[in-house]
Length: 351
Image (cartoon, rainbow, N blue to C red; front, side, top):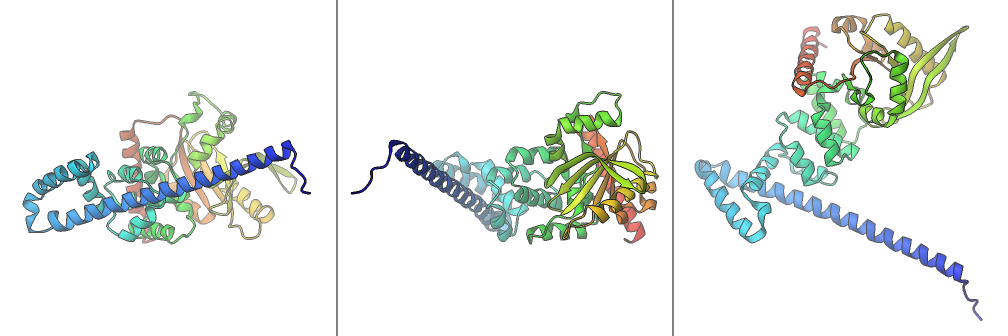
């Protein structure tokens, strides 16, 4: 004779079953959403490609806009406002901006049509491809993508200072599944307006504010960073030294030291950072990790001094930080000047 289950056991089994069924439903819904999104995105790309090929790029281009207007009226009548004139124009621009079908297929698995709409206004192809690939890898929401574009993330990365050929190689490596290089992770400047620091502050105030707003600071640093220690004590001979902030970046596979400075960069900062990095490389670096990386954050820097010190060869990155976000036009002008100066310096040295 079979033994009856107790009420408590029966209730527990029902809860387990309910949880499993909910999981199946949610997983299925997510899969359907992804499939529908990818299908719509590819539909819009094919529509744009067909219009571009059949109307706007042949002998009938002179009255292509008239045909596009007629098509939009017919399609809107049949399928709704999603196929109006402006929507069809956007689809054409989509097919022009992302002209390789396989790239669109790959991106559409992670990016929604709303993501692509955020990317389309970006005129510079390499810049657009950078945001698309970073969005795919980091799984940014549309809101996050908008914020990253608005904060001029691309212009603030070390990558933007490189020649176009190297930028193309970096983006190509991302598509092939290669891990990001430091040039994709490191920024200049870092925008720390969320710290809400007053006009007068010292390094400990800066550290305190960063730890209070650690989540926001990690977001500004970029993906893959995790906090390890503040004021980490290291002993060399009989002397004590203290590392301001120590992080680990799992994508780079290395420790990252952040040294906070109030004021402009000074050449002697290099020796201090090299000491930290070499100690960490000898005593803290795990098997399989890359050499530690150093970031010196200061309120200003002089590019010629940094160039002569050859900091990159020591794994040291010097960057400014902004405690107040300037007007976008001012930031844009500053970043574009910095990019042009860096590229000109590379051309002159033949590096």
